[in-house]
Image (cartoon, rainbow, N blue to C red; front, side, top):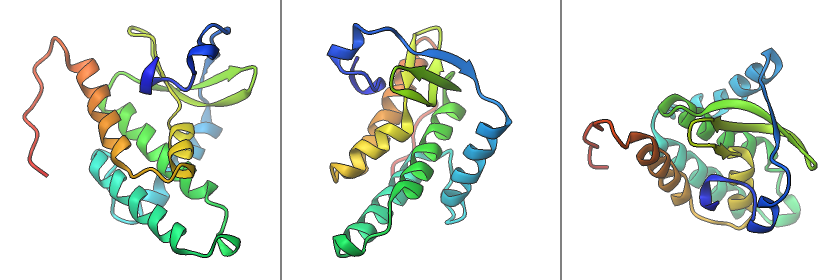
Length: 159
């Protein structure tokens, strides 16, 4: 399933998650967490700005002596949610609640291509692995190309 799913090959054989629409509590949670990123001036429509926020936040957090570090969950949730919102704005992916045997979490889903993405989980895994933020722009480009086939894409500016 590659980068566009949280499931490993072993888990792929298990039952797919049950999807349901998000409600006001989830919309408020998304708004509160994306605001953490946008307050810094980052534009949710620009994956490179979200990547820069991730890289700066992770670098600052890693410079702190491990026993003195604050819990990174708020930052991880903010970055994952901002990235998810970027994908929702730039593709047919829509926020959903995905419930499986592991619990319920926010996910992005596009029924036509059966794409399911867990952006907060993706960021959490990469944060803990101390990966650079390149995965954010790579995935944004992959999602863009997946949904751009058959329609003309605007030219990208050099960055």
